[in-house]
Length: 334
Length: 291
Image (cartoon, rainbow over all chains, first blue to last red; front, side):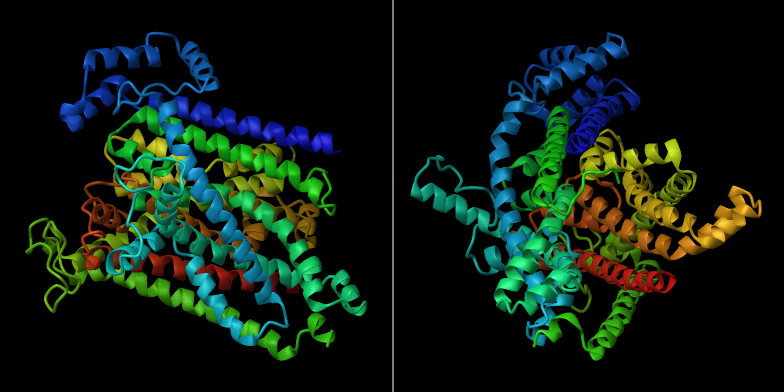
């Protein structure tokens, strides 16, 4: 049974990758005009002095696009390059490859997003569980509309407000960037402290905006769990309340919440990208913003593909682990 | 002591019901106020004040310029009044197109079943996995000159996913209901069953999915705009934030420039969220009655 589920799920994953790559391949070719000419024209018009050897670049792109070859041939080449993680060269910083450029930005995003998602998920689900727990003081209920309000505001708008209050009005934290400008990144206490200080505000905006979502999901989950027989049984056995809450309530609510986390990954990543833009945080999102500003098409495309791959992969992994850790789930077709 | 965990006192249940209605009322009030602001407001202001250089730049708010002016000399209040309807239009247009397409796909797939259903289901599932903004960034990057209408169309490209899923699921359950089966046995045509029996019963779900699709569309358009992919020559709320960020308004302390669009955007989302939370409850109550 599990094998069949595994196959189905893996097939879906391959389909996602296939679609993403194909769409990325088709869209520029569906647009009117020669993409190379167009990209270079806009680049020359907007970039001015920064452009180096235009002719060499044009040659590089043309062979990259392989526009003289038939479409199917271009498509196969495209796949070949992508499988070798070759996304071409950056238009704005010519000799640099897109892969290198992404590799430099990736740890920043993974660090920021990973840590803040874990914190937000933990606090949010605990809060949500407590909100549904009947023994919680009634006064806690005022949190519900507050959480609903916060959870409906996009991450990055919260980020702007945080910058204004905690970096401009009250200069507690840096307003942007990932580390002190001009400092050399070394693995020592001073650097770690500096990087941490820069990460506080972007992390807080992701955490605060996320808490509302997880709390509301967990509350809903907990309310239905409290109606289950095993809760009554636990009570009749005279178990301690704390034990019932944690081991019978939270534990059973957390597993479905993980599915919700998997489903929301795309949304979370999209939100984090914009947070990075607002904070000029040196991750993937800010790189994407810079690439859009300089019309650096290959970098945009590379980042988009990496985003789709990694989200699809994460969702696949979570979906595969999930039935193993939750015995209530069967692997049958929906 | 243990009793209270399982059975809720009646008063609290009533309280929750009341809360439900108040969510819907709060949500709809905010939305109607925003619609009035966005669609009646532009008729009442002097739109020339939104032009570059129409006023002295960098003025802080006072009696004459309610929300001050930006570094380009535009009156922020006037810009806000003109930008709000455009953002709402993008959301509504993308929402209508998305739900329309989702309705066709969802009803066809749910009602017909079989291969069509499998195909639609896989398609929707696959597209749900792909982060929408990633695909839309690629599309928007390849557009030469972005406009409000085009923005709505691009977002509509992926706005059908949620409606398709939710309408398909509802159609699947409605299809098995007795009145549909009776109509079928009486030899009523499929098209007539869909129009006369299915659609009226789908209405509450369509309304609910419409609200969340509009909310999603506005969130996505603001995201694309913040990245610099929005309509450069038109005023929308997302572009207001983009330009404010572009000219360093946040770091330079011009709060009256970036705060108003944020407040309006937040109000839009809060309004839509409360509306959909209220509608969810209504739909669920209906469900309970039917079942």
